[in-house]
Image 1: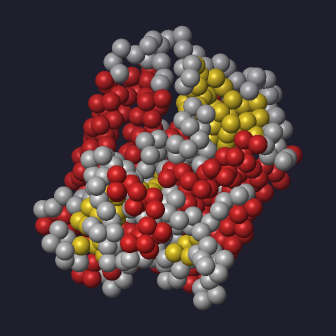
Image 2: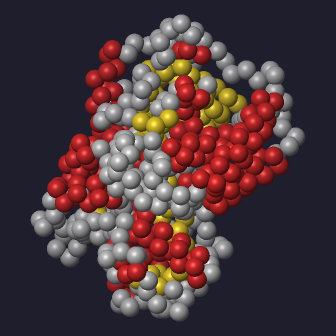
Image 3: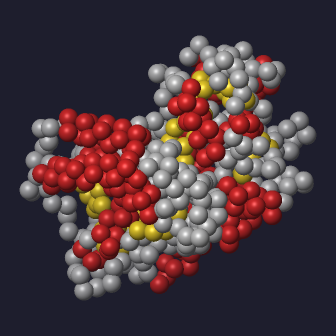
Length: 534
């Protein structure tokens, strides 16, 4: 391809999915990995809990499959679930080969936690900082590989497809326009294959456990390019985010409840038995709705998670990160309950892919949280996310290496990015104001509990914001903040449209207008085709 920046594979995203894929490809292909900010700025680095895998003798693939299907509330693709679960041990073994040091018990075996929705202990972890251990090991390996180029502080503006230059040819991915935020210049990067590994979109909500960068960029990029999207109504709210003005995005791991922590009201009264027989170990959607209901009916700002009945040494050994973070805020979790609230946590829907991570656009793949594989259905079970990243990075790597010989470099000159008709912005306040307004009404109208009226109100505001953001984008030079805002308003629209399609309550989608699950409706997932909205 006639371009100064050309690779076999362009991977957009540097978390668990992106770096795993890069390492599995790099011996046989030239790879470039784009990181929107630093390599440790994404969600993987902050993942606490661990990776689900069947390793205990009392456990079984069938049990893990059944737990996942139950959590997914009837919308999981059973074949995808079986495929993913069957690869758990191989995924853990590969990570250990990369240098990830998982926590072991006194016998030298991997220590296994239990989390909500799981019927057995099957969570492999590195204390309570599994994501950090994974990230640092994978980053080190990738930086050492001569065939992997890593570009930090590179934010993708748009994907480049053949139909943008010639509407008569079949659509094929060519690469991406990318903003180098060091010098604020946009360049093109060409590739024979492009992979989206950009993570989720939880920052579309006012309160989130995710880092600042989780703005749904890959989903928005794919939508604008013509990818099919599904299940965006199923936004998972983690039940226990630390409630403190100086730590608004700090997650209290599900493993804390797995080790016996109780959810209590300010007066010390437990309440989960009123909602589910599994109490604190019920799936996340049930626990989050229970907390939300107690906060609203009791008129309280938060509930509390109490593990202080456990020995102090046990707490410090099992949850050192959580212990230290809370202690900095003058909360000693060995003696005091932790104030918690639900917060947006995980995007169960996304870009539709097949079992090899292919999208409906040739040469474009999607892996990790950005993708909708069918694994999670209407609700993701705890610690299945990192497993999905690893399994589908492996699946994609095999398919890409098999396909590369059939994907010659296209002799197409990609036009340079044209900024001749735009100027530097003199109204940056528009971005910050719209960002704040969008996240607030998404929290109020499209949160844990929804209604038709709330969804309609949200859509009306989305339409107004979209018009304003598009006008701003057309007149001013792009910035990282503008690109993220553009992604967020697109993702907000997709969430609302999918929610409006579902005339029932199921999993993470709960609406007061249709409070019951309706199995008489087609069980197929919500589905959006961008061609229907042109």
